[in-house]
Image (cartoon, rainbow, N blue to C red; front, side, top):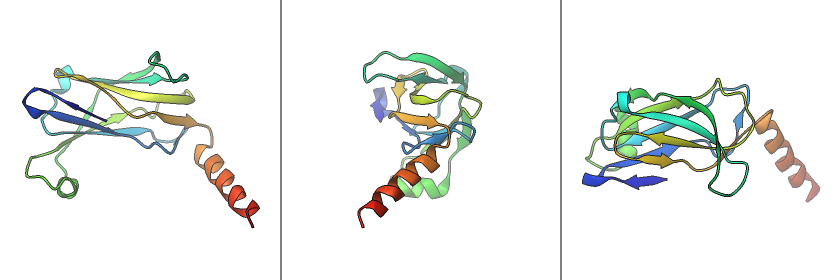
Length: 136
């Protein structure tokens, strides 16, 4: 998801939408075409158990600067520099559906919804494999 700011400032939140493991590493990557002032920025992981706009705060943290990454810059096919940041929330110990809200001095941006579950990848893979095998 993206937000257009004054002066064409753009911020994206990249998060694994397949599933994240409860006990595994959990991280989102933030990309922006401007340098985020880390003293004025933070992120929250918000529970989204319903499909409405309400949600409850679950985890909060500060963004970590990753800098500019040359290989990723090429993927944007733009001469404009892109700055990268990480939202690390591996310590979060709740399951369910969530979004990440990134706030800085320019705006507040919300990610796509994602899930955190126990044995998430195994459960998704096993279900898909069984469905495939039952079609034979």
